[in-house]
Image (tube, rainbow, N blue to C red; front, side):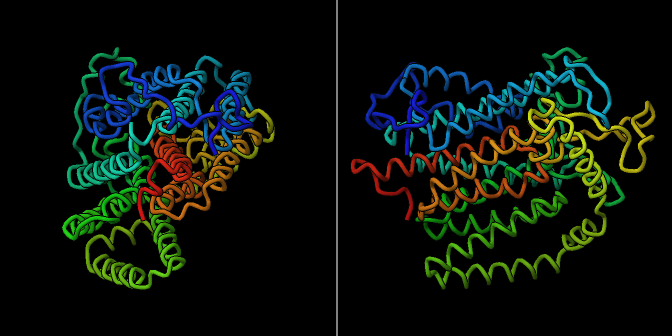
Amino acid sequence: MTVSLSQAAGRSPASPAAQVPVRYLPLRPGWPLSALLVLYPLWWALGLGTLIVFILAVPMVVHLVRRRPVAVPPGFGLWLLFLGWVVLSATMLEQDPAGTLPGSAGQRLISWGFNLAGYLAVTVVLLYVGNLTEDEYPRARLMHQLGWLFLVLVAGGLLGTFASTFEFTAPVELLLPHGVASNGFVQSLVHPVAAQLQQVLGYTAGRPSAPFGYTNTWGNALSLLVGWFVASWFVGAGTRRRFVAVVVLGLTAIPVVTSLNRGLWLGLGLTVGYVAVRLARRGRALAIVALSVCLAVAAVVLVASPLYTVVQGRLDNPKSDQIRAFTATVTWKVVDQSPILGFGSTRPALGSSNSIAIGRTADCPSCGNPTIGSNGQLWLLLVAQGFVGAALYLGYFLRTMWAFRHDRSTLGAAGMLALGLPFLYMFFYNPLVVPLLITFLSIGLLWRNDRDQRSPALPAAVTP
């Protein structure tokens, strides 16, 4: 189903496929998408990484304004309500709930503004993708570009594994005032690093993060892209291309393990189970056997390699569990003080998981006062937008999955995987901005596939 932005409860009088392509620049339609995905390593090197999403959303807005009426996907009204709730929650920025450190509304406005800008940017990308025609920007092209981005993340993961101290000063970073560039959050956006150096196993080791600032962002995005890589490199591909894809997936296991990211491990396990169920429902017995053999070989290689020691060491050192339990407990106490609107943004908790009296000091700036709402999208939604905001956010994704549940194509499988995994990751990861972008690109592809399959003038499906 496709509707216009001005008729979110009804149907659009005309599909985007029937409109005349809009060329507002001497570039091919869809160029911002190609620039965003294909050139992402360049943006990372320039210090624009995540920021390029906001920048390229501008020409997308121009395109949508000139193309009116703008079609919107099913359930878009829920997402608009969520965006409105984010705006309303700003009225609570000045509040200091019990159990958190006091602060000013001005300080919290930056966090609130960044989150809102991220939500708006991915919304623009979704509408832009959905309002392009198959002639302007084929679905297969976007699938291949998402597969390319997966390769970029694998390369970044290998760099972070074998050259974990690699970093450099980006051009954008040089242009910023020192006081701004030295801020920790700004550093994560503009300063290219290969890995986060942490003492998870009792000694300092690199956890792959390139081309992002955080390992969790890398793991989140990687797992959401696996389906698109498989769909674009295996389905309908020749033997040589499939062989290369298998080698790439084998190499991916190295940074996946060295990332020490248990959430990623669990997500990939669920991904394998999802693929097995899809194959079983289609009666692909031979494919299931091949998958089982690959898993058995991978398990043997893992146990026989040094990677097994890393996995065992991570399982024996669940250091983050105590912090996560503490922040989750504080989150529930804070949300109880504003269950409807939330508090607009995150808040630093009083004390730490060890004692309410232990907090940050000049000698230990990383001790205590963990940020509630920073260790999972669910916790962020609850503390920032309350139960109503969280319900609207999750309701939109559930509504979207329901709308496209009948898509049995390979595109549909990859798209539904990218929509389903965030329900697991919302307990561990904050998806703003690139992981949420990948999910919204997946929604755009599902929407296009559903709409275009209904049009007799277009291909029945992108993939078998």
